[in-house]
Amino acid sequence: MGQGHRQEKVTTSLAGAVSEEISASLAPVDAELGRRYPGDPGTRQPVHTVYVPGDVFAADTLRSWGEKALAALDEHAPDPASLASALGLADRLADQVYDRVRAKLEREPIEDLRVDFEDGYGPRPDAEEDEAAARAARLVARAYADRTAAPYMGIRMKCMEAAVRDRGIRTLDVFLSGLMEAGGLPEGLVLTLPKVTYAEQVTAMVRLLEAFEKARGLEPGRIGFEIQIETSQSILAADGTATVARMIQAAEGRATGLHYGTFDYSACLGVSAAYQASDHPAADHAKAIMQVAAAGTGVRVSDGSTNVLPVGPTEQVHDAWRLHYGLTRRALARAYYQGWDMHPGHLPTRYTAVFAFYREGYEQAAARLARYANRAGGDVMDEPATAKALSGYLLRGLDCGALDADEVAKAAGGLTRTDLEGFAAPRRGDLTVSGG
Image 1: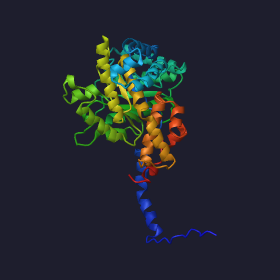
Image 2: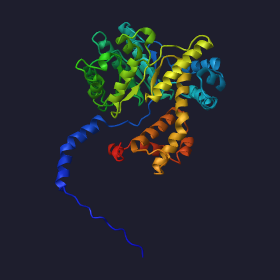
Image 3: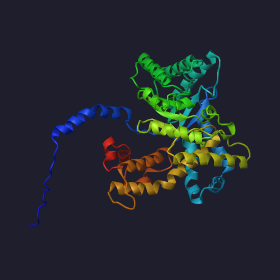
Image 4: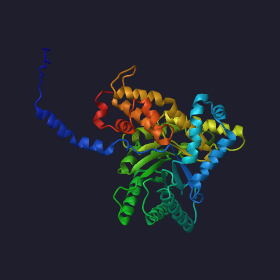
């Protein structure tokens, strides 16, 4: 008969009341952590945002961008080998992504579209902007109704500065009212508030949306918005504090994203036009502050754009493609999983860069997550926070089309999407059980 397990004697010195008193004293902090830092929402994040001026947006905009992107690919990189040569890709990687990129451009060329009533549209007579905003609402509503919409669509209004405030408010009202008249707000609705410099402007946007929700009988908090970071004051306030952190809190849970405005921000700091780019040190500093301020809040950070367009002869297009590809890969490595695209010719390199990023690393990430899930050990000792990052990486690859569910499951020892989502969104306490 085997010897039973010998129970060790456990000695303590503190009364149970000590733990209870400490828990009671920290209850407000627990509540504050849950309110301010709820974690990632677990929804799909688009890999890019495309801006189209309000007077240019049309019923066929998404299809037209896809067709133009495919035409550029056909002309300047008609096969995997030519794409590999243009971008400096390994032949094996180009073979993996080329057909996927083409399929993406045919199926879903734009993941997030913003009808622009700000810089891309400019000042117009009121009647003209009213009609353009009402038209945008009709077209967006129709696209969602007939299932031709991008996963995310919405508008960028004019900012809350005095000179254009009333016009921006009216445009937003016309657009949202048009959507309501057409059947209601779509799930993929996204709004962008540009040129924010003070947290009070974010508060004003919150009050505006509250008023609209009340007027239309919508659930409080239904409408969220992105905050565009385009001024130095939005990063560092006059008192030396990080304004962007205050903006997130001023949004009262409605902020969905922070979008870096490459050229307005660079110009605000005095960077000369030739050096205004998303990899400039000034841009890196701003995005690092944005990233830290947004961490844990559920607010996502988006990189900006390049103004170098892939147009002209093939050699010139390839130069622009290499630049865009390199900037996109650089951003992905820095955990900026979204950026802006300003021209249909940017779509081939956007998806090539994104797909290459996920396909290069998915097998290793999946195997590493499988070892963690099975407590199998290995040459790397991972913790819950790393499992969260690994699963988030795989989920983003699945969402954009870079990866297939079957190949991820195979590489991850049978882990399903539900399993990945569980690792990607653990409870707060679960992230600290292993230290780190």
